[in-house]
Picture 1 (tube, rainbow over the protein chains, first blue to last red):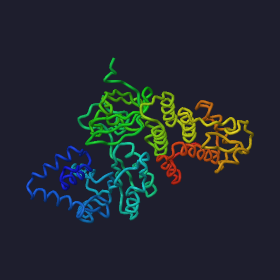
Picture 2 (picture 1 turned 180 degrees about the horizontal axis):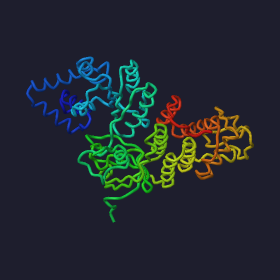
Picture 3 (picture 1 turned 180 degrees about the vertical axis):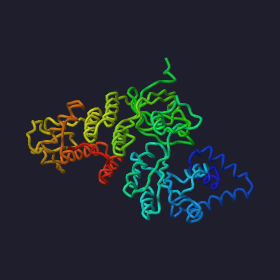
Picture 4 (picture 1 turned 120 degrees about the vertical axis):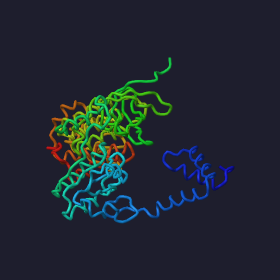
Length: 199
Length: 262
């Protein structure tokens, strides 16, 4: 890109590294920023810099936070005897939105994926088991996704936690609201039938 | 006449990865077209009609539309979800191992219908059988046959002499057994016991029902595992990732049931 000014070419190359941003989108965003008021561009730059400077992992639950321990782990009102295990930090948001859960979380930062060579060592499994050792935890809720990897992770954790005598539960699986029975897969239907409730 | 825009096929889902907001790229194995990659649009959304029908370890009937780069899965109806494999960590690991073997040993758009049948049967055997190790070894041996790497187990691959009932040797490079005399030139000797050779010969020529009746000591079972996995490592020139996961489960004794060796 010899004909393009170096700062522009550099920003295009950097934006191009982001997921879902191709070379054309990167170019469009760069030229958009070029015509944006200085303070807005500065604010965007600061936000990106702050992201890495201010954000860290909570030393208790490994959620992404700007305060360590995170506000959820610090909250005395929450039930610290219940730990909900999730795959990634963004999984906490929908669970919190329900307003139905008062316990704390543990973020694994991934799932066991044999095909990609991701084992328990690459996840925050050891940290979870360490957290469970002080006998203050009564229930572990396994909230990994209902995918093959999520199931493998949940089954692995179940087998590791079971000897500790802690109650283990798994998020219920069944038909999502607004879906169609005709298109449900066998696994979902089988589990929806197994987990049916008095109505 | 132009190729049809949409087509139907049976498929076993080998693996999938997320792309974009809610789409998935799904690698499937079909009887007519071999391995291919297709897009399942919106499969990550909770209400998706595809969702659970395009998960790995699923045997489905699919309708696909020709796309510019990748074909698009428009409909998918599960024929068999191998539910027994999904309820047990060890069984699931064995199932995922067979999928990775097929995925890493085949090329896209290269039809191999007997291999499809073998994979489908292996997943069904894994669901029914407690003899998981026999299923996996039998699958490996017959996979090599369908890929054109069937090991020569009847005669010495070097001098073509018939093999005596003594400890012979497996040569990965020559794809079969070496008699003790010819093995002297091999840089790394890989001895194979008489019993292990007998079992491999039997399995190579029999159906699974017969193969599953073979009773093995854990020593023999582990010898067969070493030979087969070593040979595949040599052929594929890499370590299979799910093989490491199986070994980890074995080491940690996280296997729920008695899975095979007697």
